[in-house]
Amino acid sequence: MARLAGRRLLFAVPVLLVVTFGVFAIAAASPFDPVKAYAGTAALAADQETLDRLRDNLGADEPFTARWWEWLASASTGDLGRSAVMRQPVAQVIGERVVWSTLLCAVALVAAVVLGTVLGVLAARRPGSPLDRTVTSLSYTLEAAPAFWLGLLAVWLFALQLGVLPAGGLTDTASEQVTAGQVARHLVLPAGVLAVSQLPWFVLYVRQGVGDALAEDPVRGARARGLSERTVLLGHALRSGLLPVLTLIGSRVPELITGALLVETVFSWPGVAAATVEAATAVDFPLLAALTVLATAAVLAGNLLADLLYGLFDPRVKFRDM
Amino acid sequence: MTCDAPAAEPTVWRSYGTRRRSTRAVRVRVCAALVAVTVLAVLLVPPLAQLDQQAVDLAAKLRPPSWAHPFGTDDLGRDLLLRCVYGLRVSLLVGLVAALVAAVVGTAVGAAAGALGGWADRAVMRVVDTLSSVPHLLLGIFVVALFRPGVVPVAVSVASTHWLSTARIVRAEVLSLRSRPYIDAAVSGGASRRRVAVRHLLPAVAPQAAIAATLMVPHAMWHESALSFLGLGLPAHMASLGNLVQGARGSLLAGHWWPTLFPGLFIIVPTLAVAGLAGAWRERLNPRRRSELML
Image (cartoon, rainbow over all chains, first blue to last red; front, side):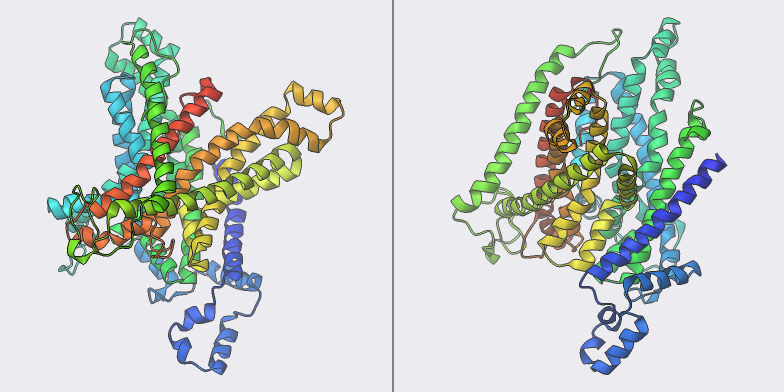
């Protein structure tokens, strides 16, 4: 297992290198000008000599490979550059915000797994029943619905019409401190919407897995032995049907990041995903590049998790073979 | 919109078999009708209806849905039904172009990787793996942020992130075809590599690639809407569905739900209809793979 993890980490290094290289290559091919981005509106008033000096200082005339190499060298010492839009070092922006994004995604993922399993099992119990039809059609509809649209409708319903939950942010505007109770109240809507946007995949997969397992011989044998329907469903069908779902959780990281990008923006949640959108809107290259690499690292970590979980839950898999 | 059905049901269960078979045909017809209505509306409404979607009527702003305005009006008094149809037109156009480019690139790359094999295959697949480790929407945001504004960056960014899945599907298909006897027969009959690829491999992978491309259209539409919603997509004067939702945020916070609700429905309904049709098509091609997810 340690060997597999080590091998995957070794594979992750070249991927991350290629992604950072690609980030700099795309930036070099685009009309984006680091000098103008750095100077902002001051560039309009500055004379050519100052701009040239700035260009020289920033190394904007060097080929992008050289700038990429410099970025890598300083990134390895923990210096990711400075974010213009946040007026902070990039490392600090990420450090302050990554906690909130992780919290949001973790709560949403757990909610989606639990709710998805319950609904999926209920639907798989009687395929074609009204309950199954309702759950399945609802899942397909939710899968097609954009997360930002669901978020906006949730704001309208829960914050404006019912007035039970806050519409966005991390804490109330009047409060000075971040307290756990306030964060929990503000977390309900964004985490709920993110969970609902991830839910269809889990429901449909659990339904599929449990449905298939119910048609297999072990279940038939269990029924023949006279075990109760409950034991058959939860002890036999769910155990084997849930296996593919559990192992695929790690590979849901890209969808989770996609959802977080939209949900954090809708709810002004102060996480890294909302910062990514802000960085993109303001063309804040240092921040955007660092966050793109961070997201890639998260995806790779998720893939590793999927492989490890697969080996842990399924004793038939030997890590040596992977 | 259940487009899948369990493969084999144990006999101890109550069987709903006959009822489901009849609803499947109905479902396909409903999906086909919805796709037809969507395409016709997008093609015919702008030239036929002499209505201006930009017509501002401040006296009738933010009216709830009524007979005169079935979807209500927005904060400038513009008719939302008309704006949704025009928005769908823009979104669908971007989606179609992006999906077409992605399908062509994906099929070419996947077929080349599968047909050539060896180190070329490994290299191409490594590139595909690397690219798919970056979340699609994030890559889209990155590209659009650096190249914006405009339609082309959006279409390119959506296309550049979507050819990966097609390439994987086509490559797997080609790999499974390569060991078939009729390919061996063609090779031993003296057919050139090119002839085998064009006459035998491409026609065989075409249906799979076509399904992948069809399913990619709503997905590309979704991506375009997400980018536009984030303010990184199409310029505001090209009102796509995402721009409409983004523009309605102010009205929503004032308590008016209709400018947000209807553009979203215009994304969901065509997506479900296309997914339903593609699912039925796939079932016909390969009845054993009925139980796969269609979205």
